Image (cartoon, rainbow, N blue to C red):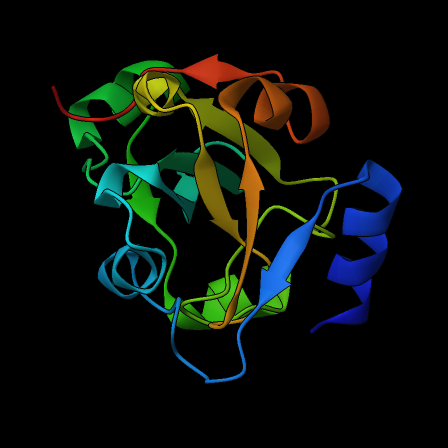
Length: 153
């Protein structure tokens, strides 16, 4: 696992689990199947680029889609999803491991309210075979207190 992620997890006192087999948590479907949980309990981290602002990361429930209309209203401009190259260059993570731990402080992290309905959530830890178990309140306390409603109803 990435050293900056390990340091961030330790600093935030967040427990995590690493799986020996690569790819077990690469997608929402993989993670849900591996842990035998609902897809909505997998917290996906998505990097977006508002046209007039810096990049932002949205953490949302794995069973929800991000709404372009809601993003436009929230950011006040057209917003697109970051491509794989930008995501890697800005976070150091590839698809399946993108997470809010140890990322550049210039990236605003937004916590979507879609995750409120679950007692336990699982969020990637920088690889496609690691997850941290957290509550919604812990995510707000330890990662970002900025709550948003950016998913489709």
